[in-house]
Amino acid sequence: MRFMMIINGNADYEAGLPPPSELIADMAKLSEELTKSGALIVNAGLQPSAKGSRIELAGGKRRVIDGPFAEAKEVIGGFAIVEARSKYEAMALAQRVVDIHVDAGIKDFQMEIRPLYEHGDCGNAQSIATEASCAS
Image 1 (cartoon, rainbow, N blue to C red):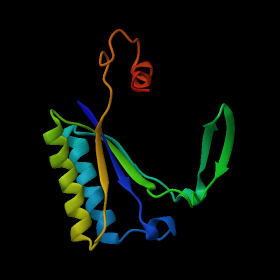
Image 2: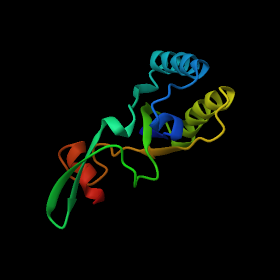
Image 3: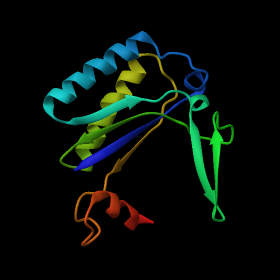
Image 4: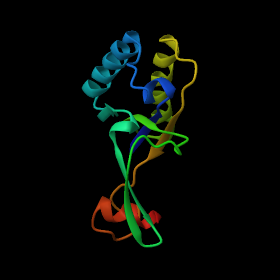
């Protein structure tokens, strides 16, 4: 099963401050280990929301909003997609990420772990992209 780990950013992240060097080094080591084991499919950090845009559809009208997104309570700072045999295994991988943040002195941290739709999860859909829409 594939899981997405969504790491929320904090005020320092949104201000464009780099993470502690210890955090960067330890996350790089973990990423390398998980890539070699086949557990890590992809991961990346995102730049602050000030450098992004949002497309919003409301009442049938589309609009583009440039960042930063002041109304956003939770901003995604990074993500990883991992392969795990179960939610329990995915949570164990996520706990390793939390441990690295704690060891680097991070006091506030939030991460969400969610399974991705897999082929066949929504019946006879032809693709995962199509299946994702079955949740709507």
